[in-house]
Image (cartoon, rainbow over all chains, first blue to last red; front, side, top):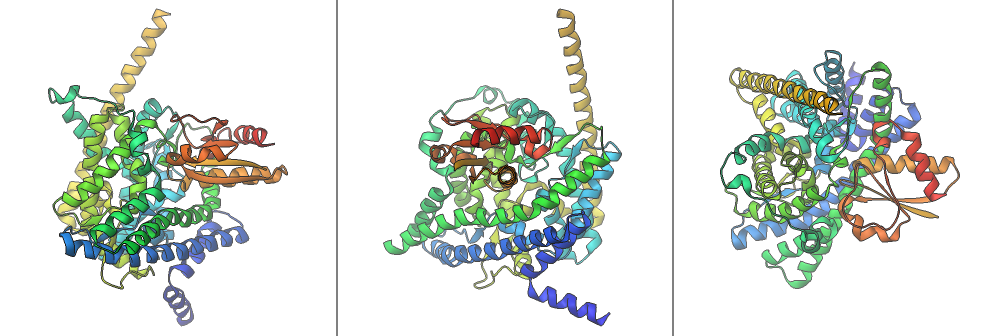
Length: 460
Length: 92
C-alpha cells in the first residue's frame, strides 16, 4: 500500500506533463485503443501541455507588466489576463479526476439516449472539457469528489438538452441537418439570447431595425487574423503602458507570436485525443445501430457562416471597449478574442442574421462572460497553478472566455459552491421548468411542420 | 506535391481531425501532399497559395478560385470514404 501511495505521490509531484501521458494512456486503453497508440496519444498531449506552459509564460512575462503599467497610468484596471480557452482546457485535462469525469459524461449521454431523454450522440471527447472544468472547479473548492461529479453531470445534461433544442437552428439557418452542437462555448450564449430575442421582438420600433454592413470585412478584417490582431493589441497596450517605442514594438510582435502559438500547442491536444474520440465513436455507433441520432459536433462547423463572421468582426472591437468601461470587469480580453465567433454563432442563427440584434445580444453575452470571468479568476488561477502552470510569479490573475466564464457554466458552478439546500432546489426547478416548456415548444413545432407537410401534399 | 488548406472555426479542433485523416488517406495511396490548417476567417488571405480548400461545415463567404470540398462527413462518420476519395482525386 505504501508503495502505491509513494508512486502516486511521485507522479503528482511531477505535475501535469507526467500526469497527462499516464491518464490519457489509461483512458485510451479503457476505450480499446492499442497500448502503443494510447501511449503516443498521451505523450503528444503531455508535449502540448509543456508547449502551452511556454507560451503562457511568454505572454505573462510580456503582457503582465504592461497591464500593470496601464492600471497605474490611466486607471484602466484590466489586470486579469485572458490566456485563452486552450490553456484552460490544458488545465482541465491535467486534473487528477479528469478520467472519472470523462466516463461520467459518456455514461450520462448513453443513459439519456437509452431513456430517449436526448437525441444527441456526443462522442466529441475533446469538448468534454467544457463540462469537466465545472466539476473540477467544484472539486477544487469543496474537496468533494461526489459534488464534482454531480456538477459535471448537471453540465452534461444541460449541454445535451441545449444541443437538442438548438439543432433545428443548425439545420434551418446553417443548413447542416442531422447534427447538433454540444459545445458549451457556443450553447451558453443562447440562455441570454433566447429571452432577450423574445423581448426585443416585442418592443415597437426596435423590432423593425435591421441594417447591413457589406464592408465589415474590408475594414475590420484584421480582427479576424489573429497575428495582426495580436500585433495591434500588443502595440496598443504598450502605448497605454507608456513604454518606449522599441518596447512597444517588441510587445506587439510577442503578442502576435502568442496568438499564433497558443492554437498550435492546443492542436497537439486535439491530435492526441483523436484516436480515443474515434474509438468512442465506433463503440457507441455499434451499440445504437439503427437509431437515428443528432451527431454531436464541434461548433467549429458553423462559425464559417458569413453573418457569424461579420457579427464577430464588429463585436470583437466593441468587446475590447466594453472591457474598459464595464463596471466591475477586470479581464483584459486577449487570446479568446480569436474565438468570439463561437460565442455569437447561435445568436446569429436565432435572429436569422439580424445584424442589429446580433450586435446588441452579442455584446451582452461577451459582457456576461467578462463579469463571470472576473468573479472566478482567483479560483481558476489557483487551480491552474496547482497543476503546474507557472503563474504565481507576481500574483496576477488569469481567466478566459471559456470554463466558468461562460454563463451556463458559471451558474452551475455557483449553484454547487453555494448553500446546497437553497441552490439545489432552484437549479432543479429552473432546469425542469425549461425542459417542460421546451418540450411543449418542440411538440407545437412538430405539429405545425406536420400540418405544412399535409397541406403541401394536398396542393400537389 | 499538391498543397491542401484545411479550414475550420478555430483552426484547431475539427481541422486537426480532418487534416490527419487526409494525410493518412494520401499516405495509404502513395500520394504526397502538404496539409496546412487555418481558421475560416483567414481563408481569404491564405488560399491563393494552395491547390485545394477543404472546410468542415459550410463555407459560403468570399471568392475562392480553387476547388472547395466540404468535409463534414469526416466528422460525423457517414459518407467518410466518398469524401476522402473526392479529395484524393483532386490531389492525384
